[in-house]
Image (tube, rainbow, N blue to C red; front, side):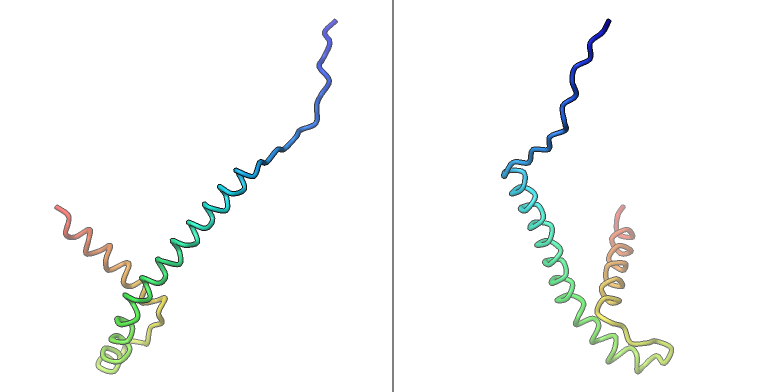
Length: 87
């Protein structure tokens, strides 16, 4: 006859090092997102002003763009130009 071992309840042990590592990782991720948004704001806000104040009155088909729309236009144009320049 085979004796089975008594089952022990599952114990979840989280030490303080794991919690601080998670907090540090979360801080790094949030910090990078904030930095990306600030750089995007600095780069895209002048482009948005040029688009809305110069291009829209000249070409009647175009509409005003927001900052977030200009950010995506900027990113897509950089990807397109970067792909075109590779040899």
